[in-house]
Length: 358
Ligand SMILES: NC(=O)C1=CN([C@@H]2O[C@H](COP(=O)(O)OP(=O)(O)OC[C@H]3O[C@@H](n4cnc5c(N)ncnc54)[C@H](OP(=O)(O)O)[C@@H]3O)[C@@H](O)[C@H]2O)[C@@H](O)CC1
Ligand SMILES: Nc1ncnc2c1ncn2[C@@H]1O[C@H](COP(=O)(O)OP(=O)(O)OP(=O)(O)O)[C@@H](O)[C@H]1O
Ligand SMILES: [Mg+2]
Image (cartoon, rainbow, N blue to C red; front, side, top):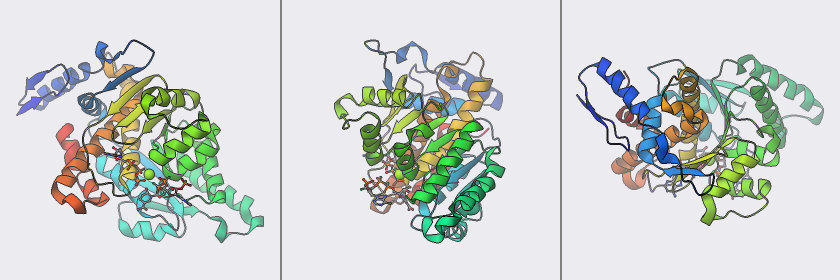
């Protein structure tokens, strides 16, 4: 079998055995990063490099292992978003994917798939009396606390809705996860929550924010107190991440821009021109798995040059390139009728093409 590296340095290896494949994996890892990343003029180290994102994915994807992720989201209005995030995490390699949602949403989400573990624990205001609120929020927290330490990553927000009582409980869940050093991906209505309460993630380096165009506008307005400036997109994102205290932000759009306040990376692989709802949910579930793999990779890394990159940034790059590849394949086949579920079906093939399971 001929394996080509695809790294910027043009490395190519021929391999006919799994041993050689492992050696090739190491060579690919060493091809990462290097001196080509520095821009120099100011302190932004920025690079638009899709092959680098593929190399990051290969480097951090372990042999098959056990990962558990949880999605906090799903309410009366939205049941698709938490399902998309949770099933994407499973398709990529999580062995268990939990969903913590409202009681109304749970039977619906369960009916989409027997693969998911669904906890009907969240409550919305319409369902409870004022005098019950304190007791119920204590109960919600106690339910989730039992599980928190088992998770390698939490995704907060897909289809969560904006009910103030529910968001109050979710804020407390985030604080508990933070105390236990569980990485958190914040998306959708989770971003609505943290835009109002940036302290929930401020200074937490295991937090990833994945805003879409609207969510980004709201964040910039709240934190930087200005309008979005697309001319200086990299600097603005870097400043925003720095201001929130070193969280990693992936600004989704035509290119996905990723910054931890230090480096800025961009993934621009052509994906799908279809903007069907739910692609961001695939991304948040995928990033959860990749971030947890990247942290594992970094903690065990030796001389491998990927160990110098923030693992949270690596997880975002890997999630972005994978979603874009799957979206490209889905659009090639389904064209105008491409749906989010078509993209999810192609996550496995896309991952296999970038990083075959050993
Ligand atoms: N199949 C599914 O289940 C899917 C469900 N999804 C889920 O949907 C949720 C929202 O995500 P999204 O991407 O539509 O949000 P976004 O771009 O900020 O807003 C667009 C416009 O809508 C408006 N608006 C939003 N919420 C509002 C509210 N409660 N009440 C009033 N206005 C509201 C918003 O207004 P604004 O905030 O600007 O005032 C803006 O004009 C989120 O939980 C996501 O995960 C998606 O993942 C897709 C697949
Ligand atoms: N204009 C675009 N062209 C190409 N790809 C895009 C464009 N905008 C977003 N994407 C891709 O789609 C993915 C999801 O981003 P999007 O902005 O659709 O998220 P979202 O609005 O949160 O999605 P959702 O509908 O799930 O809430 C991103 O990773 C990005 O790669
Ligand atoms: Mg979204």
